[in-house]
Image (cartoon, rainbow, N blue to C red):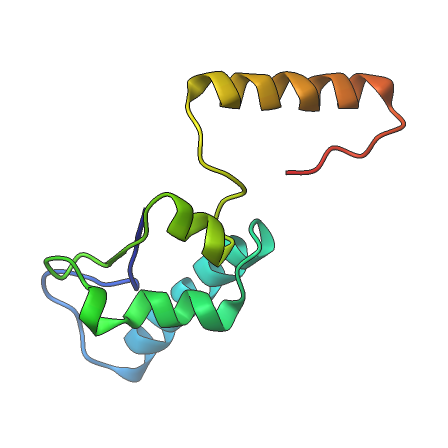
Length: 102
């Protein structure tokens, strides 16, 4: 998983409105990730701008157990584990009594 800030390439008009727009886009992305995972906004932002970890100026790479430890994903697995979890969630939804969670 690669985490990086919103950037533009090419010609950008250097006015305050452009920077405000980019900042708002980044905030929306951060809020979405925080809402749908267990990572804090501060930790996500720290990973996003961590210069020591930037890979070819693309972003910070987080892999496997690291992503689990940060709370970005729940667990590491393959297709078999994914299908098993999907079927569990489907069955939980059919019961109607259980709330489906990530």
